[in-house]
Image (cartoon, rainbow, N blue to C red):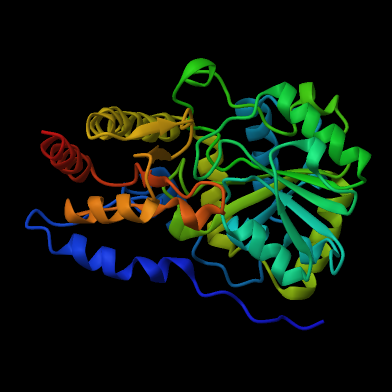
Length: 370
């Protein structure tokens, strides 16, 4: 079956609101897209520059050094043991993997792809690409018998929700009952803000407390875009079930999906250096501590948002009305309508703006509340 008609790209609907925000005399504050604005760390850029003599084709599976760095990172930063080089695979960013995974795993008509109710839209598009059906649900008891792939997203985009160990266990158990793959999209795992996640690690789907050491049909995805300001490098990876990794590797070899060699070298260095990750987290924490109280003072309620790169906010009215209000203040946000049908009164605001722009947004919000 060929690829059918695709929906319009939703962000095109933001054009008039963006234009309105750009008219603000203080300039626009763009909090709509989570694209990093801070410099890529010097240690990463130097590694990239040193690896530019890349005359040979890179390995789809990744260099031995990169595979070992991924394995070590999972153990050091996420408490995941039992992985080896056959359990990991670098990818060209995480979005392409999210979009292609149902197809690469052989899903098709009649199969169901489950994803969160507040969801990054690419989960649904991945089902569309494969000819499968998407189903939004956070309750494992609701997942239908035809489910073949389950997406978890913790910390969540857009809502910053963190799934604890018991929630992850329950979801994985249901997926096993359904004989489905289960995949944790964990790209914001280093950015915990509240409660037990403020300093402790956000648990991975591959955590031994979740899997009891058995990674069958269980995968986790991670990206260096946010923790290392490497969005332009398209540096990500998937880990877990060796049989699934082997299947994905073979398919990606046939398709020529390989991460350029200089980027593999840069990833290796980034994964081994924790200092720059802590520095970047401190930047985001400082911006969050400015923006969150300003939104609350301006009449927004912040829901979830205990981790991740966004504030999930509502005024209790349609999101497009809130988007228009923010645009009048020169602030661009994302409407909850873009993240499924279940949160039409929420907006998503990113922490990826400079300190000066975040301070400007807070000042404008404060003035609007008077």
